[in-house]
Image (tube, rainbow, N blue to C red):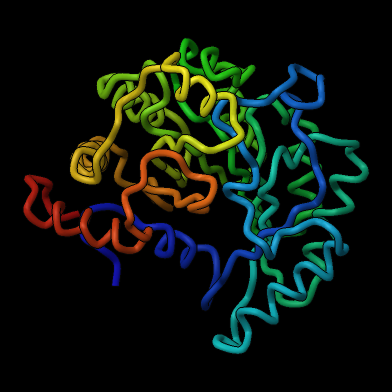
Length: 302
């Protein structure tokens, strides 16, 4: 059942596909221009890719084998399931174009794969590439998912993101013009950001032709530059409790454009990597608490 407070991602997917679809995350072995020297080295200060790449995405097998392994995992419970090949790890438009397009095409050729999700940076696409991606899609839905993280250039600079908000605006507009679906990803609570700044980001998001959005709380992950800064007391950020973060999420929902689907509010890194915050809540438990808060809030039923 759809909730009455915001458009959820499953409802949005139902406008693109008939029946149930499931993401299968694949690691195609891409790098990141902020790591390999193209635009920078060391990557974003908060990033440890192992914190968000599930075991099923481990590199090693070819892309068809990875997708078939994912299908076997889900098909026993949902035999009629169809799948979205989710290119998630690192920057999935950063590489030789012929190789990129070949990987996307091969993923779509796997039986049962109904569409693509391509996770990338907003400074790693152009009009020509997006046109080629649409052609490879051959009519199947393709969702471009851009890591925007914040709308504030001062924040993006402080975490060594190596792109600005203008790059996000440009990428989203080009994606819409190319006839592809578009989603953005934001991290709430990045160093130096105030609640007011986070809400300004939501207001700026509302001005763009975006269909989906992911939010999650800042996580301090072992092995990152941010973790080192945190341990030395060199950085300052809002330390959310579940209650204070839920309060922020309620306000975001009240401000977000009603047609934008929210895919998630939180992320859950592996316990052995996570330093802070350690809330002890699974994602579904957090969402249940959020819905309870929404039920007693001043938000009108949508």
